[in-house]
Length: 280
Length: 261
Ligand SMILES: Nc1ncnc2c1ncn2[C@@H]1O[C@H](COP(=O)(O)OP(=O)(O)OP(=O)(O)O)[C@@H](O)[C@H]1O
Ligand SMILES: [Mg+2]
Image (cartoon, rainbow over all chains, first blue to last red; front, top):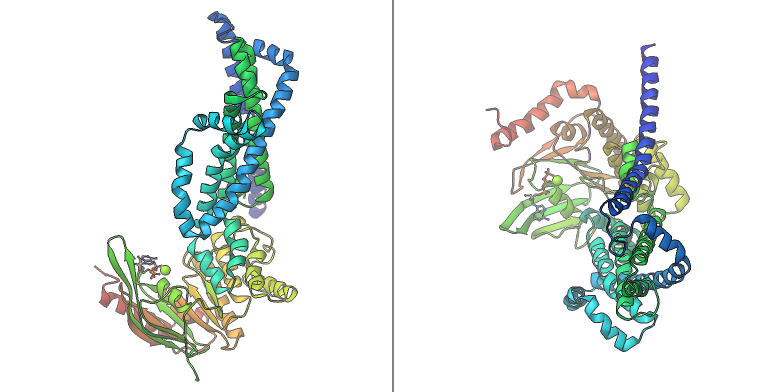
């Protein structure tokens, strides 16, 4: 009898916890939405209250109107920029991962290229952009290359660190099982490094947005960066804001896509691990 | 008795650290016969894990030799099953998948290996948990998975490093009984080198108990445990068993590992 009552209590507690879990999940969506809404309200009424001229700070409604008005331009220029971002990111993945592998596998190579890589990071990319303009013209290529220059670094660093950062015992285990070095790499070391690699990819995708816009600022005839420069020239601050909103949306969506890929590829890694443990 | 399964000859190990050299092991000599169950007990930091890694050929000795069936060990041994001090499971593989890693690495026939993996998991009370991932298992369950992984290829030599270190006493008792059962089932075709800091566990399981001194680890004394097998929980309450434990504890008291104030 007493056992029964205990079990029932337990069941009630568990369902209550489940419900709380749901509420927490809802809160993760709701809380930021409310925050954004409050911010927008402040912005709208603040701009009105202090009578800030719209060429300095247009309210959200003005920005929205501008977005609607320039929807076609924002869309086509947005596509151009998105394409540049994606290509820059893809190029840095295509080059960064093999480079990281070479650095991991071959010490002398690592020593040779590390200073170069760090120099490439220390060098301000905006300063290189005009040079790329001279070399590669106004087209797509210089933007992709600037994006690449900015975002290959975190990919390489995180991949190398992920490949090195493995418990010694996991390698011992592989050796005691007679696992060859290639099999050890693919069965143990690489999957073990994937969370770190994805960490690098997530940083890289946000940096790729910066790369594309910098490229367009310096020498563009298309894209949202170019649109921003033009709007700036026309003192069209509302359009300036509209462009920034679009860039932000593009950045966030691309970031979420990388995160989605991570979730699909590593459902059991650190991403879901913590939450699953809490629920258990 | 034939050739020794494992022979350690004057084995020493130094580690270089930031502030000088640490002597982890000091001229260890030990001979283990095939099928023998030997436990090594000693205070924390006396070099037990180091000793096991040397015996597995995973770490090189600074001086001395490791011989397996008369042959000098020069690289990682693959005739062993190892249970490390931590479970060392792959987070992205299920319990079954982790056990099967050993079978895959050795190219064992898949179907038979999987049946055996399931049987082993069931034997240590993990039936129904085959498809769970490490983060869904308790610490004790994870360690049990790693024990199954060390046994699936029926190794001739099982090396265990404080496998029950982090477990509650009930689970510990059960696993100690399980290990004894699995070892006896092999009818002395499996040599076991077992590291523990539990004197009771060592006496319970072993043919011989090796007691080590504090760092640098040396062999202090080797005790034959002459108790009938299979050993039972009831034996732990009886005078002969307690006398053995007492002997080890007295040794620790003499060496200052234990103090009665
Ligand atoms: N890789 C290493 N580098 C430097 N020193 C080490 C290394 N591994 C072990 N040591 C040192 O060697 C000594 C023995 O370590 P070991 O891990 O073998 O002890 P242990 O007996 O297994 O201890 P415990 O019971 O706490 O697990 C310790 O003083 C430790 O600091
Ligand atoms: Mg240890």
